[in-house]
Image 1 (spheres, helix red, strand yellow):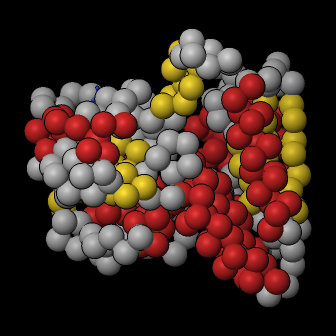
Image 2 (spheres, protein in one colour):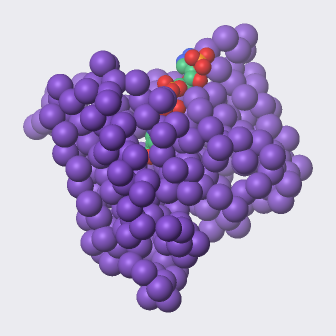
Length: 288
Ligand code: NAP
């Protein structure tokens, strides 16, 4: 068997079309502010992609670039000002921040209604309550959108989520178990005794680990759906640049799975599209 490729770019393009329609009906142009501190090259690539996406859709973006040595208080002050700006609907702090900054307490300062990353405790807590109409973290909500788009049945299915981070694995598990999705969910993490046998019993495996190609074909039940969230840079001397991107799932999984999302071109584009969706939702429920 060779698995069908779950095309995240096509799914994101379809979502963007729906967003354009919603944006054209918005009373105020949706507006996203991205705060980036320091010179991490990968972060700059991510921010550029987000800004390009805003331009494609007609979302206004403000890029706030701060030097590496910016202090906690200065970033706090900027966030508080952005909270008060009634022309602004989304605030995003690009991760990772330099180590002298406390990312958690900065996130806590963002007005939850403008928290388009969905990382504020209020927004994460709402998911636990089954209130899924707010700001949901973009990667797990992007995975849910892909599964819906591909008409993948979730009800009663056994799903294994590998990873329990607050930004991906844990909200992913909650979304899959939530009423309406109705999967039976197991969370696998670094202390799980036998990750392979947990995965082997799953109809759906979502890998969000950060370990290149950890999930092999002998971990996967024939016909299972496999979503690869991982983005890992691995050395590759055959490439001019000396590296390539790898997911958390080995390519040989395609021999046994029915559907696999690729890396790149799978969950990545969906994460950006869901960020746009959160910004549009925030503009639609305009707050001053
Ligand atoms: P993270 O915060 O480092 O969390 C990794 C999780 O994997 C942790 O819960 C950890 O368990 C678990 N883990 C580590 N080693 C394991 C092992 N050997 N067996 C089972 N579980 C193990 O990472 P993250 O932010 O969730 O990101 C995960 C991956 O997704 C990364 O590759 C990241 O680059 C990628 N990512 C992609 C997107 C996208 O848009 N496609 C967005 C965000 C993240 P413990 O909790 O026990 O430590």
